[in-house]
Length: 280
Image 1 (cartoon, one colour):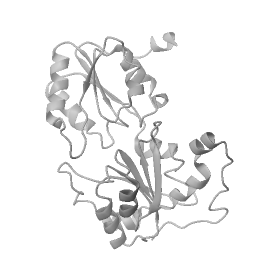
Image 2 (cartoon, helix red, strand yellow):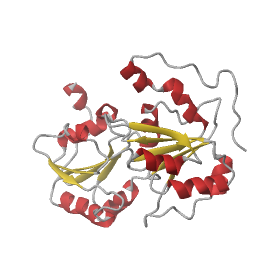
Image 3 (cartoon, one colour):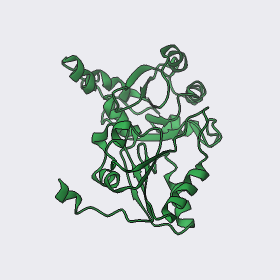
Image 4 (cartoon, one colour):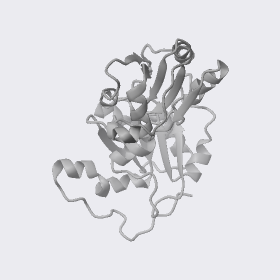
């Protein structure tokens, strides 16, 4: 294994790597991510990076927390970006470790542009985004030939913390059979109302996957019309990935983690040979 890592890139002094850590399970880290963890002098990490991933760091590496949580004291994005610049200028080998993928609602582009602005060399290492990998750990595929030929990824809030007003809800509702949402739990009532008002059925399946791909993972299956009430009753809290669409029904057959834990046989395909049409 060491011979393999010898062939991978070197994290040089004064350089920043923006690396995706995946949705939680350290087994989903890429080799480039592990390579960075083995070399970095300083690791600036998000709240969504699981502790098991951080344990792969060099024993003498410095860990700096730069996580953000809605409604809680958090570092400002500009300050985080400039901290990366300062560390690199001090000659450190810097790893900016972000949950999921840094370029999928991870603000990695903003941080990279700051590095460009200050002449800091950097590398981007993609990660498995929670909207795909996290749902896989819940037994929910984002695409299924009998269900959908398109999927939309969107964020549940903008930089000011409210539901983005630039989303074309009618276009999303009409054109995307499956909708995957990041950071949407807090505003699910308004989001569900927007989708129902744009033509989606209140009975459409919805799933919330909290702490995806970690030992703390919990999944709530409900409907668009009951989503807000059921989330409140469940006591679930972010981080969560929310998925809307008929693919949620596949969890009855594809909950492989539940099957491993319970030692049970999975259910039959809930669709059988029936073909489901994409919503108009």
